[in-house]
Amino acid sequence: MKENKSSIHFDISMDENMVPNKISWKAEDSDKSGENNSKAAMLAIWDEEENNTLRIDLWTKSMMVDEMKKFTCQNIITLADSFERATGEHSIANEIREFGQDIAQRLGVLRAK
Image (tube, rainbow, N blue to C red; front, side, top):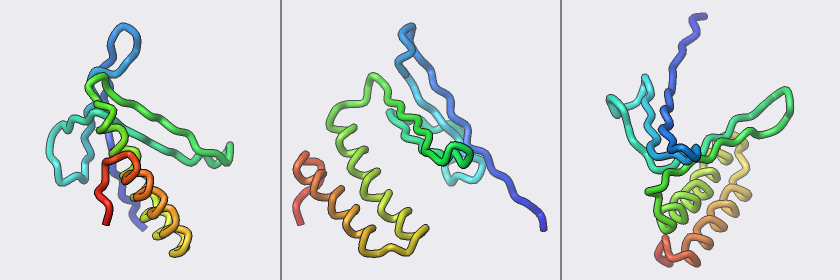
């Protein structure tokens, strides 16, 4: 069986204090062509040797606090979607979604239904 591969490439430009100024990325299979800019990135990788999650959380100086609140809440809500697809645990996924939505409403980044 032929194995397919794809790459995602990140470039992080930093100031003298190693604080990100610019985060750019490109993916071979993305609908977006060329380089894409971002103010923040959260990457979680499962380390099977350590049986643990490795995380890379980056944000630029230009990322506003309200944007970070929204970004974090959206990550929690969409994490529920990934969890549900991977495990089939619909009830727990809904609890995670509700938690993310509740926090987002309390932070003012999501309107109440």
